[in-house]
Amino acid sequence: MSNRGYYNDDHYYIVLKEYLAKHASEIEKDPLFSFHIYKGVVETFSGKYEEAIKTLNQLDQFKPDNFSNYLDLGYAHYYISCNHYYLGDYIKSLETLNKSAAYFKHTDDLNGLIIVESWRAHVHFSTKNLQDAITTIDQAIKIYDKTNNPTSQVNLMLTKHDYLAEKYQDERHTYLDSIRIKIEKNNIQDHSVLMRYNHNLIRKNIVEKNVPSLDTLMPIFESQVKEANIAVYSNAYMVNEGEYNFLKNKKIKNKEALTQLLLAYKKNKDYPFSLSILKLFRKEAIQENNLAKVLAYDDEIKEIEETIAESELKFKVKVFEKKIDAEKKAKIIAQQKNELNQSRNFILSLAALVITIIFTFWIFSLRKKRKQALEEQLKQEQFTYQLLQNTEEERSRIAGELHDSVNQDLLTMKHNVLNGNQMVAEDFTNVIEEVRNISRNLHPSILKNLGLKASIEHLCEKLTDVGLFTTCEVEYENQVSKNNELQIYRIIQEALNNTLKHGKANAAKVILTFNEQFLHLEIKDNGNGFDVNKQLKNPQSFGLQSILQRAKAIGAKININSNAKGTVILMKIPF
Image 1 (cartoon, rainbow, N blue to C red):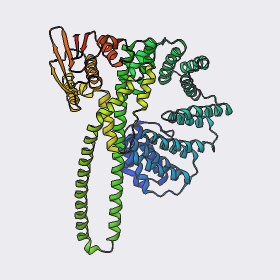
Image 2: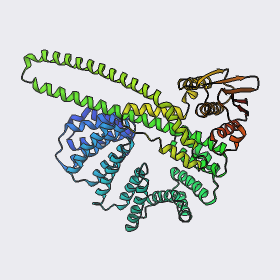
Image 3: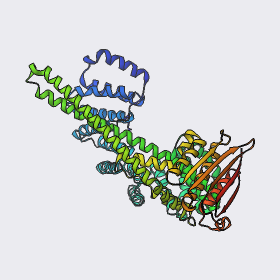
Image 4: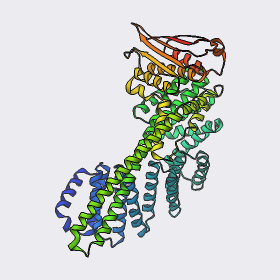
């Protein structure tokens, strides 16, 4: 957000506020414009968003009659848009930008139009309207062609490159070549622009695994980062250095520094940056054939991805609700204006007309609420039926994706799973419920909220519902850590899923007890059993290997017995 050269002087702001409160009616229009804009800008940068909107909206009572007035109103509505955005009202933010653009067009102020379109693109991008964001930022970049400011134009092109990274990877890399041509053609030497460009070029070469190019780029970027001394680029360099070292030497030399950076990212809830480091650590674990670490990183990655997905859903719900509210308000306002215009010549009947309108509106609202309640109930019933029908099919599909490619690189397997579970927003309510359902299947949120005992009981109930009669006896008093609880839950889940899928059993039981030093876990079924030794040697037995590795990770002793009468898994878990 541009501050248009204003500075924040608290004393001057207080004096100006008091002066305007007393003498606003005595001040001529031109200086009054300047006073209100200064006051509104200071309030914006001080976080007084509602007060800033009120201050800047006061200028709408004046009709502009010169170049300066139009320019001031353009910036006033730009700042109003920014304040609506910070308050979470993205619809009003975009609507106000239309007014700002109209004033700037009246004065042919290209810099003002660039600011407006850049901010409009930012609002679209923040609200996940990626295509609108790209289209809008292209308009701002095109306006720059009429100015003599290639450095700022390239900076905006780099922002578009960031937008493309969200979805259009191939187009993103091609666009980076266009940026390079622009930089070379205009001999751009701006340090921050070149540093930003080199960072993106390094990311491209990391994706392409182009080590020779990275050998040249990394020292240049390191020098730029040291000179700039900006934390965000210093952190980016550390991540790039880790990726580069792994590509070149199959080893992360700066792992200790990246571990500290990861802790900071987690603390600040910088989830995308946390993911990039965790995925790098996961690559190294795969290279080292350390399955336990791979599984641990997988769990962390899944948890963060689910948190991101949940946040995005909440954000989309919020945007959608704002949009609905705005449409309802616009509809009501339009109806009220129409009613007032029609009743202007019927003053004597105005009271009766108002009563009729209020009564009609009340009936309409009551019927609408009833209709919405019925629709919501129907949707809930349809979802419940669909959930019962598809839960096991979906779990089998996810399990199949996880098991069928065990000999392939785990990283590729992970990406295939993600690519197979993209959100499709066909129906808003169904999207939310389906994503939440997938989230629960992939990560036991009940474990975090209600604990291990309730999670096991819930899992047994689910399996009984799909045909495997499963009972449990759980005596547990939070003796182990949350991480170990998760591993115990995963072991039970994997064992029962194997019973359901392969064991041809009709009953299973889970028993969890404890003594002074150990938890004792027993999982048994009445299925047709299997050859334990043979399956342990079978590279396709990912489920069994997963159980053993998770048991090893928590220091548990495990014994598996299986014959034609069924399978029994015994575990002794220290605490």
